[in-house]
Image (cartoon, rainbow, N blue to C red; front, side, top):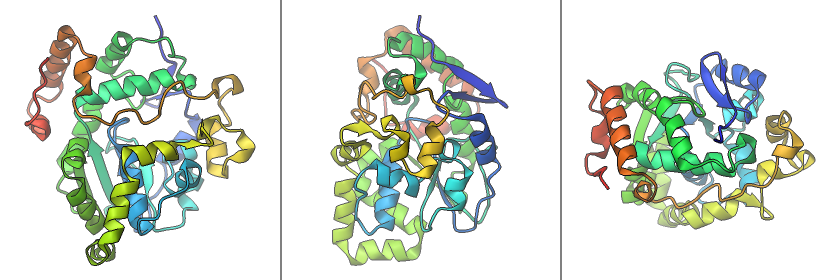
Length: 311
């Protein structure tokens, strides 16, 4: 049986991709009034949202690749507190924290994106399998499913994460949406995201529709896949000396023998419903029982009331 290497850091479940001192400092970050955070549980549309927000800020001009993009929308828990304090605004900061752990200010803005737990589980499985630092290259979906069910994966339990943010979905400084919302009507959602970032950004998209078209084009799955690699190599597999300071700090604690190229795409299919190609009938039943247990008393699953979780 293959089991990824995780550890419990002050109640936070994380893998060897993260360094203790960087994570602790990141969680102590004090947000600025002009900060914008992109928050999600892993594999729920974070990268997609990063590209959309970056493109809105840049007027539709894409980053050349993720080597250029990553320092401009840093991953706080991985890239460290300096990546946020030295960030040139306007820009956004990515985190994967539950609400009670999230660096928070009612003056800052938070975009929270979630995804149905079935597709999230499948996407998270491939993420864990394809990144060498997890030591799970021979792991099976059945093995990962059991860990996901117990919340013993990066950033802990899916439902705890979602339920921590759901009560804040109507807060004036929170924009709450689902991956499936974006898939259904990305054009309207890009406009809403721009309006949330600031009146000038929303007005600009209305005034210059070619910018909206560029945001749509460069936030497509194919465009994001091209940006994910630098010269055909994922950025965290590059030599440290080729990385910006924040990215170099993120990989300094990873053994060289684990900094191998990914065995699959960081961005895979981006589909809704791919879970049906992976789940057994028993796994569907087990996850539905887990949903009933964890969300009792909440209407959170109505976010996906138009989806049937049946084989």
